[in-house]
Length: 186
Image (cartoon, rainbow, N blue to C red):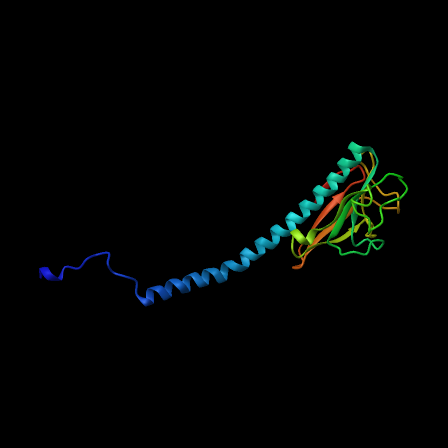
């Protein structure tokens, strides 16, 4: 039986084996996809929260290094009337709520430090849900003075201030700003 030597390694896969492998991959993908999508959504809201916190800290830094009142202005402030995912950085050289008009830009007004930025552009489905004081009263943003302390000369606020970031799935993250200037994610 010399003519019937079987070569090992020339054998291919059967159709049944291929179908079993495809089914296993399909089950793994079906189980893993929701987990992957949740992880992506979680990283989106976490990234947006860090972005807002860093912007608020940058505003505080500007107030200290340049001297004066600087603010993180929220687009959904009733005086602005823009989308809740929008904010900008601005200064008030008068110290008496002389903030730039909503239509002003860095090109038209030197008191606008950063033009309106849409958080949802980089973090799809994420928005700034609210900016409130300790009593739950909405405020238009966060302001700092030249000593780095948080203040609000436009309306009376009760500290701490709370900035709530939310995504379309209902997840939220919170940033807290203390009167003394401490900014943290809670």
